[in-house]
Image (cartoon, rainbow, N blue to C red):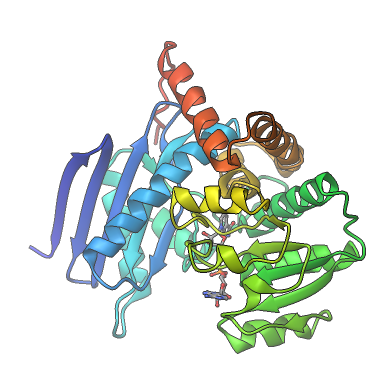
Length: 357
Ligand code: NAD
């Protein structure tokens, strides 16, 4: 047998470990919540030290997706899949086709989309074997394709909101952007157009050079970007960047970025709060991409995506107002609001969310 599936439940999460030795596929799919709709979240393709690290990442990301989808008002539950990037050469098409066939076995309980390390092209390969995948190349004005520009727009609007709460105009402000990938680079362009001055860092020199070919920015060392002398710090690389080592060194008065799971632990939001740093919960600010994926799933167009992404600052405002009124850190407030939304939906009769075909 080259294909193996091991499924189990832990702390309310349904965990499906999948392996296909014929194409070096080793991954995990986590269904965190199906209360609001099919569990939906991106498929991450990344290097992991071991299976335990991969599983922990998938579980945490899946929980974040439940909260993100609930807070964005989407008819979707939370889930995530991660695939360990093979160390040696591998057949990408065979790997993603195999992954797609595992999705078929879940019958639509989990819907995949693009994430770190995957592209709309990969999702098209997955689509060749299963309907349970989104983030496919766009046709006309329908929603779909690379979600990153929508994520960048939502983060940009969130930054504008948070700066204005701080009494700082975007034009003339200084913003540090960590990570210049699909979202970070697009965000930099929007910030630059809005008159912000940029400090940037990326572990890949070519990402920096690509950006500098388009716009001016000061480049900071990767391990120092978080302590740049700026108004706002925007983590747009991987998760865990806000931790017991970095938070005490942050000089910005606000943190708003695209990265998922920016807080290494819940204690880190308290640390930010204690230092008077205003933190926009990541999954509230970075919901633009999943809003686009949801619109594709629901057959909506880009106009509706734009309308919904423009509402992100409103949702952020509700979280930050409540945090200010209660003196509690914003991520505690957002988590509680998301849990309340899911619990309220769980208490009401639900329509079937299964897809056909
Ligand atoms: P990406 O892979 O295109 O870009 C990530 C960039 O970060 C790369 O250029 C990489 O070299 C850089 N990087 C990695 N580690 C770094 C470090 N320690 N310091 C500085 N740079 C580093 O990914 P993306 O699609 O731009 O997503 C960025 C983040 O936003 C991820 O955490 C992702 O989960 C999150 N996110 C993305 C979307 C989306 O629509 N793409 C949606 C929601 C959340």
